Structure formats: C-alpha cells, structure tokens
Length: 113
Length: 113
Image 1 (cartoon, rainbow over the protein chains, first blue to last red):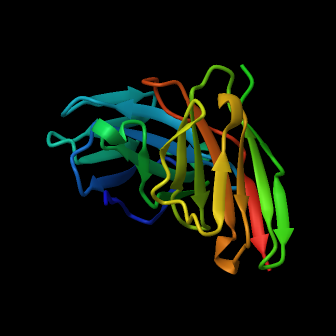
Image 2 (spheres, each protein chain N blue to C red; image 1 turned 45 degrees about the vertical axis):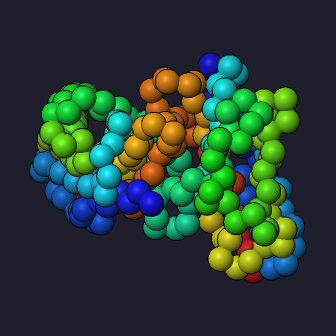
C-alpha cells in the first residue's frame, strides 16, 4: 500500500532559525496536504497542493509540491515559539482512493527562545 | 461554524472490555473518517464513510472494531474486546466532498490497562 515518509523525525532550532521538513510518497499523489498538531492537540489543516511543481506561501511558511508529485516540503522562515508542534504531510492518491489520506509520521519541531 | 464534536475525551478500560466513541461531524459534511493515532506516530485511517455508506474499511480490524454512521450524520466506533495495543487517540474528521482538508475533532484518548 501507499507509504508516506517524513524527515527529519525531530528538529530543534533556536528562535529565529529556519526549519524545513521533507515528505516522500511511494506513489504518485493526486494532492498533498499539510497539518500542524500542537502538543496535546489535534491535527489542524494548513494547506493543500495539487499541481506539479506548485509553491504556496502562508506568511513565514512555504510549501512545495515536487514535479513528479511524489514529494513535498514545508519551510518555515525565522521560527517563533508559536511554531512548536508536529507537522504532518498527508498524501491523497486520488482515483478510487480520492479523499483518503495517508499521513507521514510527522516532524516534531521544538523552538528554543 | 461548530467544529467536529467527539466524546468522551478520555477513557480508561481494562483489556477485554468494550468501549464506544461518538462523533458528530460538521453540519453538511458528507464524508466522515475515523483515524487511530498511536503516540509518536501519524494518524492511521480506520474507516471512511460517505453519507451513511462505507467507502473504505480496509485497515479496520474487523474482528474487534466496528463502526456505523446511522442517517449519515453521527458516527460511533466500537472496540470489543479491547487489547493493550489499542491504546491510542481516536480521531474523527469530516470534510466536504472535493473540499480542502479535513477538520479533526479533539479526539478520544483511550488507555487500555
């Protein structure tokens, strides 16, 4: 079945440093979504990427979808303590699996003030 | 709009006992999902409903897990009998067909002792 891998598993940064997490799927995706889960909380939808090579920005967050639609990345510029949490990518293979998301294991981000 | 409601928030049971979780999705969301999130891992899909029909239950351990969505609104997930490895957070999510992202509930944290 479809597998989604994320690296790194953990990332510790000083406030103000940049952060990047990478996501790779074993199969071509229809779309990829990113979620943030605060400690003790539930996943919250951040963004969806659909097109090959697509780049989207949300303030300090930049999301990319690879040309082959099998990988993605999330980059945070100048991290803040409010960025702390686990960032998950989730792939939708489309077709008969449309709407069914396979989540990566997440990257846990800690930010030291 | 109101979010996805789940209850209870926490449940502790002994192994071999039964337990049930309840979910009320966002009004008008036809698609409902149950995910299992084991500590330190990404959410894993258990079952997907479209209205009151099952779309995908391929990862639901059907010897002990069951789920229903009567009238296409509320849903219940049941485990009988529970095992120690069922300790996890059970997340319910809903979405509009074709819309962006899932909305997750706060989850039910199950501890099996």
